[in-house]
Image (cartoon, rainbow, N blue to C red):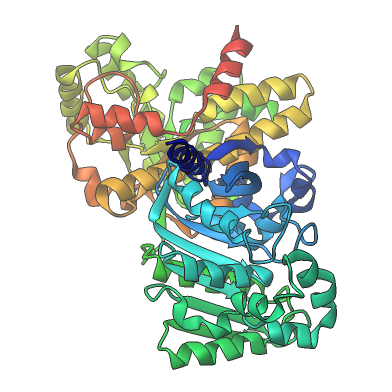
Length: 593
């Protein structure tokens, strides 16, 4: 009886201990601008264009359970809401040599993460066994992934470099959950490795592997996939990458493994490059190969054409900023340098907001004569439709088009669009239908939008800092505005993919203000770098999505994505998933008091 109790207790302890494998002990997200990496990828605290994607990602330090130990690692994931496949990255080196750092992981995998992958990586346990029990530290990252809300664990890939290639081979032998893997300059035959580099055996392998000298042949064979390739998970696949100039891992390790895989009809591809162990001079080709392989073998939908977005600017002309800038529109100068289609929505009442009426009219004319500018009415005095009577709002629309139509005629244009101030379409369905009927009579189409990122709020904080000579803080809020805007666009693309199975043509709403004069160009440049095409509002609304009914009958100015949703619960569910702006909103509320 006592023996039974002891045995039961032992088994219970074992299931408790090993049942926690992969349990996340802590996961702390940190600000990349506060890391040493930031010093490398930025200049004057602004991110370098080569690393524009860095601000699209979240970075977390990770501690998780593996056997009876806690192991450290990292997570890099897209900021945009979504359900992403997982790539487990296995580093090279051993013990503290080539220890996993954020810098290493960033330069190895951040481009891949930006394509829509969650990257998980382990530093292995402190007592490194070079492919022994430390293999569990890799496999337990699969259980870590199971706990991540945004991880699609039906699509797990693995990417190993150098010694990490050996860990990847071992993982493919032990687990059937890894759908595909990439191995770069990986070790497949330790017998060949120590023959070519005897110091590897003396200073690394013999020190890491328990009882090595007594069991040398057994232990080397255990870690050499060349001798047991037929034990690799049959439904997985491999991409082997190697450099002919590699002096650390002979490229014949990959060539010999490829021959072995051929002999057993295993699905693989071999790519040989004229480069060294770190793929110097071939990083772009490496990244392209990674993206292509994982996209294909993890069934990630590819974009068959560029995502499209129209840029629209409300509250033109900003005569106050115009005067403060000594009668130059810095935003207009920025747009001239970009030469992309823009739609503007004019409040004619702004012309009389300063004493320089004649110059303000000339400013509006400068906007109107640009060939890339589409003209739209935004009322005369920016009234909120739900706050005034129908007739008062009607008069404000008509008054707001007087100069605008004159300028349109002068430059052979038309004024086809009307955008409601605050995007307040009315307090109920009757209020909205009545106004829609009037706008049809006036030959206006309602100008929708899908994305806005509260640039007016960021601008208020930005101008506050500038007016108080806090230029460093102003730059930080400007950069935050840029990153949040990109995050919002990604979020609505994710929503679009989820609902429509594609990216519909987006329409971005912003304003004629100081922050856009400086930072809108950066937003546009970043969007171009991730394959966005800039189109006119006319082209944007040709997308069939815009022919859907508006199902939202309240005054709040929400995205048309939400207006098209007939299910209010679904609408609320998606709105809760939108990027968090609470910190900025709290600061803004405090500032304006």
